[in-house]
Image (cartoon, rainbow, N blue to C red):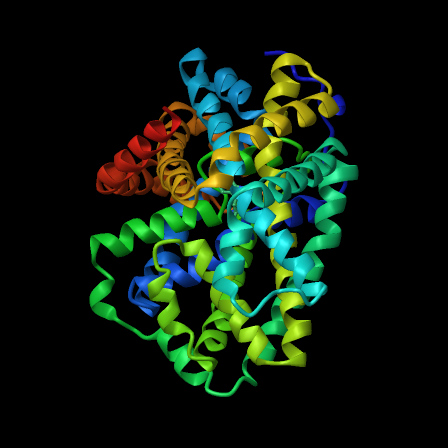
Length: 453
Ligand code: TRP
């Protein structure tokens, strides 16, 4: 139980640096498209309401828990869990690493599409047959090339260290992202015929609130969007030294993430409806990510010269969002190698990054495979990881966790509320979600292994 050599692991230079990096992790491709799509699928405003309740009752308490473990131990998740809970808990840390590898492998493929779109948008080279264009971009060697290029960028930032790489990268990219997002949302209000778009997005279909589907979708989406369930934010918090209020930090991150997701919907839907593209969403319904890449450029094109600028800005924003999230995914794997095997950060980043690049190649050839990775790892395993994290904090280390939280959080009432949510609410809700998701996740898993054969 000797204190680790924290100085050689690195740490954040400022509190804002940590928060911005955590927001950078949370805000990603998940917010820009997955959220809006899920909302439109699952009862509009009803989904938004269930989503927010889920974030408040399960997401924020779990995020706080991850922060607590990270700051308390100043170690990567697997070592932190072993130190606090004994070797029986170390496998949870390995599950986290597995999720990091698995999610980034396909996430980077989608991010590669984003890069390609951003570059072509700037060059004004997105053809009007966006369906064919997407087909060309999304799979095959083109996709592999951009996927690998994106991984290299991610590796370079992570290899640069906590302060000089990750903190600096977020400090530059995140403010730009916010500016672009707000600018686009304001611009979207000027679109002709946008009204029905807002109405469709936010239509209150209250009968959907209590359906099983809305719950599982809100749960999966919130975990993915908040970067929960795989120790990403735990890892980030392990570089945090200052004893600030972790509950408040979690609230800021969750608010920012939800705000961005919500605002992205305020851009995407008016744009689609303004150009009568809404029917295409359902046609391409199956590939949730594809729809964004196929329908939006059509809308942009119809805008003429304005569209030429706006589409570049939009895809550059998407690219920043993806990069700051990918960094946090890679960092989970890198931290495990640095702390566990005393590798240098550079070596860890390049080795893990190369492995992930290789792992993503099947997804770059087949969007069904990509979708299955998303369902099994990006949805199911995250919930499983969150379930065990709640059990760990709630039943294995609650006194220590409360003591750590007390450093910065003064209110006993808030601490006790947090403890009850982690002990009673989160495990029960997550177990229900796991049961609901079992069949779909099993099918996705079978899809993955049969392809591998
Ligand atoms: N939250 C990111 C998004 O919305 C994706 C992501 C980054 C993530 N790091 C994560 C998801 C860790 C789960 C766990 O796009």
